[in-house]
Amino acid sequence: MDLKNEHYILRHGETIYQKEKSDFIYPKNPINSVPLTTKGRSQVVKSSEKIKNLGISKIYSSDFLRTRQTAMIVSDEIDFKKDIIFDERLRDLNLGVWHDRKKEEFYNQFPIDKKFFDRGPKKGEDWSTLEERMLDALTDIDKSNEDEKVLIVSHGDPLWLLEGKVKNKSREELIKEKKEKDGFIKTAELRKLA
Image 1: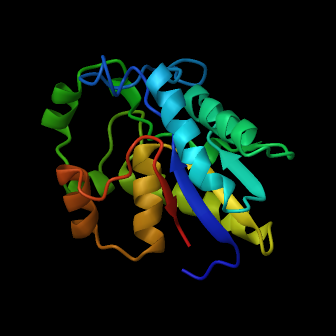
Image 2: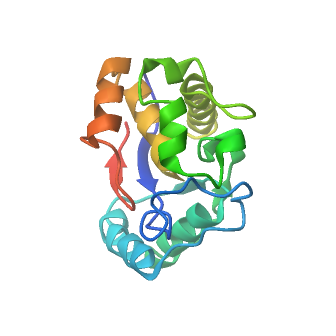
């Protein structure tokens, strides 16, 4: 994929769902719920040390609380003087009727395999839909900027699929990363996208 700007991706910091509620899927209405933990805030501050030297000139973020908090911490830490641009297309994967339920039950119905690219949960998204949504956001971000250094703050699955698309990873490679957590973006991890 040919991009005219320099893009970096950052996953939000740790939340209670990575710590105490790791067996559960995020709640149904996550826009203003699920804040960062104290550790999550510290993780973002630490990542900001790396971001400071990049010369970031634009920040785009999912509008969920955990990503808004992450983007605002980064903004404060790097003394960013512009507005953060919040974009709904950068939101986390919508798991429909499965929100608030146990992950084990979900994965029994929807194992991590290639089928999830084409078959998502009721009232939710499959990975292909999420991939398209993220690619659409990236394309618009890239077109509306020129010679910028852009930071995109989002969530695990969206960033994993976006990076896979930009770097031409096969579905097999992506599934391996997701299953083995090998290469899957960690909380508050910063990566250069392109």
